[in-house]
Image 1 (cartoon, rainbow, N blue to C red):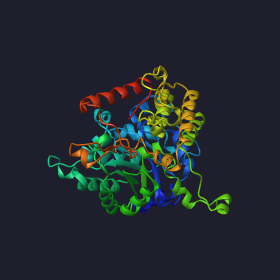
Image 2 (cartoon, rainbow, N blue to C red):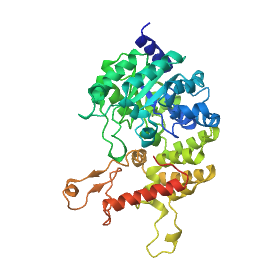
Image 3 (cartoon, rainbow, N blue to C red):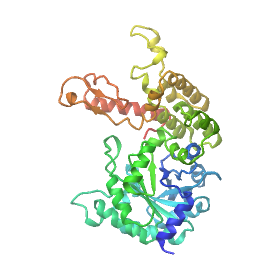
Image 4 (cartoon, rainbow, N blue to C red):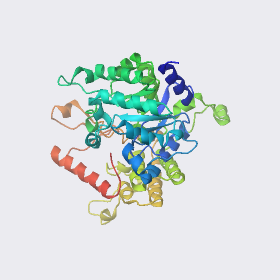
Length: 439
């Protein structure tokens, strides 16, 4: 049997022959067991990744291994992702848990500075020959399939053709297939395309790559709804579609994929209604229950960022002057000094009970909103960088700055871009001081 046939059979087996396959991205401190189980409640067929695991630490540190690799019998299908630049070390790490997962993934997509410092992730793409040798050795020595998650290679005339742009990416993917890689996930952006200045992912490139390979290809980038999943699948022909940041905001994002193949309940048939609409606060409370059943390795670093992303729009509503029935103290009111916003309460939360209290307050606020507004708020954190400026504003006159929720925002109060940047950094430091990481 050829490599492609083996890969296809394995893929169909672990994904239960579903098309398109919905895939949860590997996310540092965020794709932990509790969150995976929450997402699986809304679509049991989701393919999940562990958070990125450092191969060298995984081999050397038993405590790190026990804390950061968590699973349970119902946590399948599951791929364990490792980062590293030495095949021997990655193989050693993978052998410790290969019997507990459906495959081992090599991280070739992390664009962060820490990956540059450690020479792993997307920075390994500058040496395709070394990557091919690593994957070949992993395939030979491991008992489970090996997969890779990559980004597009960067473009530029200063880069040699064999590792430049789409052509270089395709050539490397074909070599990966030849040495036995069973699946490739492609984030259709290069390592420079990240953060607030992120541009749309290149679905045309995904289609070209998928057409050039016979093993399954998973598409990653610009997936914020189940309709995006279908659009990407139809446009690219990829076997699976992955979501990351949007799934952090709305863990029910893939639920429509499950609803399409599940049977309607008796009540839904009798009353001709769809599945119940879940509020963001309901999902957040459910996540806390999962975190109790499957405790994350670090409460402050894992749980609080999840809540912040799920409830982002509700937490910042007061900051935008939309406090609903909670009221807003007047400028001369003594109570103004005592007012503590929901976001501040989450910042200072140190245990499960205080986090639940914040979610309950958010639920009270969310209950006052219409269903349409409740739905529009779900992806607030994902859309935080999606700013639209009117023509009038772009040409230097009048008002017209519109935020990610389609509302007019006030001007910058005379602050320069540098001052605004410093203010944002200060806000991030407050979160870091509270024990919360904001990526």
